[in-house]
Image (cartoon, rainbow, N blue to C red; front, top):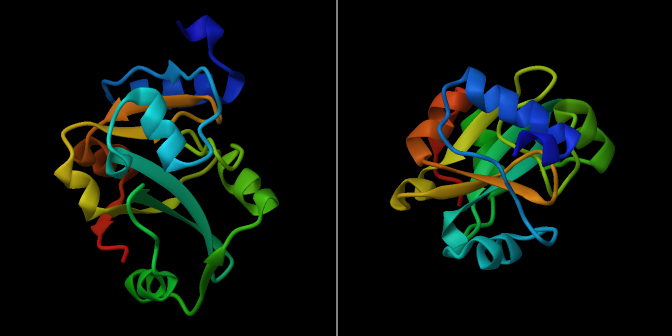
Amino acid sequence: MSEKLPANALIVESALRERGAGGEIVVLPEKAPTAATAAAQVGCEVGAIANSLIFDADGAPLLVLTSGAHRVDVELIARTAGVAKVRRATPEFVREATGQPIGGVAPVGHPAPVRTLVDTWLSKHEVVWAAGGHPHTVFPTTFDELVRITGGTPVDVE
């Protein structure tokens, strides 16, 4: 299947294999710009979608992997991360930090490590779906695997 994956998804696939992750990247028939559209395409609850949200945390990228059922409380995340201000990153900031476009940011496969927080709510789902580096790609994983492969910190995000 790898030969049919977009270039960014190939990078993510390689990062997943390097980290011993088990899920295979799936190419969706349509873009999945929201948790609801991703959930509809893979056939799961919205809460089982791991939204990859990049924030600008005092000038440094911060990846928050949050359940599609949640909104991120940026003040809570700022306190949790120990920074003065957390704000939504620009598309350029996201691309620079991850090498990936908004709507397809994967938990791994970035040019350099990105500090990551993982929504504890995702642990309620046996299978969690995360973006695969491109707006048309996702892969199945678990909460524990997301924490392991990202070196992330489990937190409450709302």
